Length: 251
Image 1 (cartoon, rainbow, N blue to C red):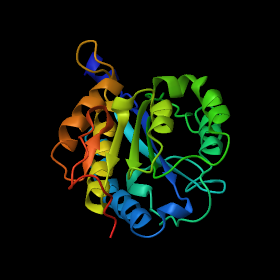
Image 2: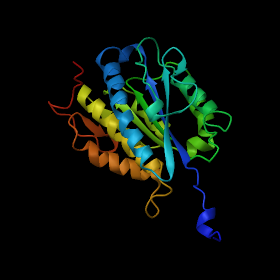
Image 3: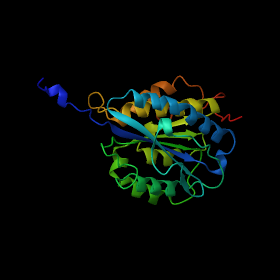
Image 4: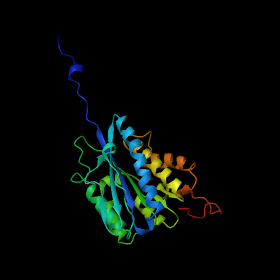
């Protein structure tokens, strides 16, 4: 029997999209805040695994960097969500966000975490913080801004309470529209889930509809979802302070 073209078809290896969590583990995150972060990431990992398994274009991997007095990667390489065994992070110390930017810059390279043999989509980066940097953030960010992977990345920040430095988070993401503020534990858990799932779904597609960038599409979709979450809002359309939303409830 003669061979046909179909006999020569081989499966094309999927590309990789890495989702980065950058987590502030400074002392001000101690207690319910860091507990909510740990709980949220543990619960979102199976969702990311499902998205990855059903995606013909790309597999999704996860990387996590905690920063306080210094920086620490939870694993020394990105892991499939199914293989990423979350190790609860603890809060203590300062807020070395500048050092985190430098460390992220090091890993956003072919010699770092972007070495998938079949190629990589631009990553998605989620920054979570409840305060302001205590080191030279601007120098670290300036270095990171020169990184082509960072330029192309989906960048979203979650400001945990009104004490978070929104200007710093805006500088990191590139726009205030990409900064979302949460005011209680439940909102923090839900927004982490929404941002992680939305970023993974959109970031691992070959393209978005029309002229909309992946960053813009994620912001649009997350903003729509955040409207329905009590205790959370987009900084681009932050509500006027009222008796019900002018406080942080972390008990």
